[in-house]
Length: 246
Image 1 (cartoon, rainbow, N blue to C red):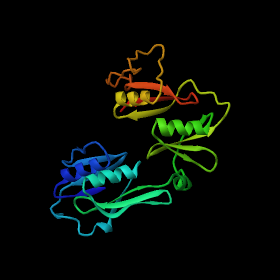
Image 2 (tube, rainbow, N blue to C red):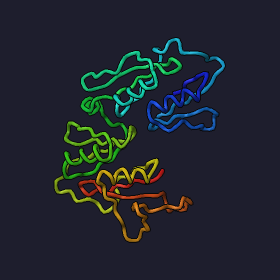
Image 3 (cartoon, rainbow, N blue to C red):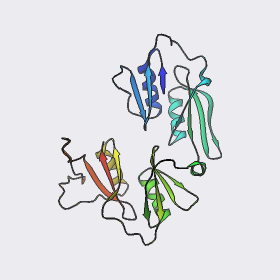
Image 4 (cartoon, rainbow, N blue to C red):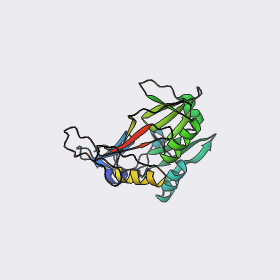
């Protein structure tokens, strides 16, 4: 999405505040770019664009959010003008505001039930076995903070992020593999480990790895194959998961 403005920096900072995203950075173009979980908004300045948008309804930016109520509260704190206040429509949330330049921004969250009905993979995806779907749901949703969908065929769709969903299927006699089956890059590895440890996650230590107090095996960043800083833990079924620096 490209949004032109008299003050692209101000507009970029406003959007970053709304979505609790990192302050937009310059991608080399001279203007800020905001990364919303793989969706990019660029804010620029043009000679033929000036003043507020006189017709915001013509093009509406839709952004799915994890917590629409909290996002709406931040919009209220910023003094945003609501075009259509946040509303719960059978478990799905929609609300539309004007940004500081008059562009329409709609925040939304589709209900888990409807999202599961609409899901129809069109590209490759992976899956793994778990012992118990309910326990798995609680762990990935409540501990890891991921969205977990229940598909009709009796499997789970675990949304690692908005671009990646993996399947988890029940296998009561499941025996976990002896290798990492899911790798998750994170912005702040130390903070991620501290947050997970506070929720009861225990990190693994392996013979032959030099791991620090947080159980992080440090890479040296040289690009010679040592890899990123990384730490490992297991889900309730014993599947090994890693979190590592980007």
